[in-house]
Image (cartoon, rainbow, N blue to C red; front, top):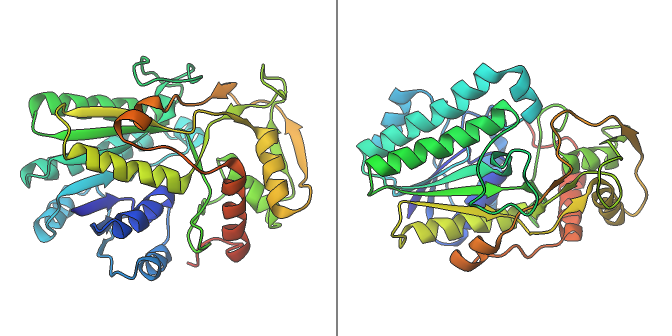
Length: 337
C-alpha cells in the first residue's frame, strides 16, 4: 500500500517508516517538524534505500491537506502527528485541544473526500485515566490531563465517524511507554528541551548533558517505592502498527482497539539499573517529590493484540537500554539541525 505517515519524522513515526518500507509499502511523510528535525528524513532514506516524499506543513491547514491527497495517491494513513507532553498540556490546554483535534478533523475529512478508508491511530494508555494496572481494552476511558483527554476525544470522534461511514476502518492503538532506538544507532528519541520521559532523561545523564536523574517519589505502593510502567521497545511498537494496518484490510467491524505493551511493569529504579548495566557504571540520581497526576502502576494486558494481530513484544528492558545508549552515544546532542 501507499501509506501516509503523519508525524513520520517523529520518534515512533520514523521507526514505523523504516518497517513499512521493509515490508514493501510505499511511504509518504507529512510533518510540520514542531517536535522533530528535517535531518531525520535523510537518515530514513539512508536506512531504507528509498526516496521518501515529504510534505512539510501543519495538518490543520485544510487546503494543504486537500492538496496533499490530490497530489499523492494514498491507500491508508498512520496518524502520529500531535502534541504529547502531559505537563505542557496542563499549562497550554487550548493549544493541545486545537492541535490534536484539528489535525484529526482535517486529515479524516481529506480521507473521506478521496476514498481513503483505512486509518491506524496513535492513541495512549492515558485513556485509562487512573486505572492503568493490567489495563484491558474494554475498560472505561477517562483522563487526568488535557493531553489524555485529546486521545479520549479523538477515539470517540473516530468511532462516531465509523458509525456514519461504515466502510471506514480504524485501528486505535493504545500504547504505554515507548523506549529504545533502531539497532543502527542512527535514529532514536530526540526530545526538545527537558525530556518528559524517563529513559531519554537517563540517557542524557549518562552522556553528560544532565547532572543527575530526578526520581519523582519513592513512597508508592510498589516493589521499591518508585512508579512502575510498561516499557516497550519502539521497534516492537512499530511492528504493532504494521500488524494493525494489515488487520484493517480484512476486518469486518469498523473499529478495532488494541493495547501495545509487554504486559510487564518495570520500576524507575529498575530501569535506572538496567541503563547502568548498558553504560557500565552507576549514574547519579536524587529522590524528589512526586509529580501531580502520576499513577503508581501502569501496564498493559496485551492479550488481545497477541491473539488478533498476531503481534507480540519481544525485546527486553536490557535490549531497550543498550539500543538507547548506542543512539545517545552516537548522537549526544540528538539529530543535527
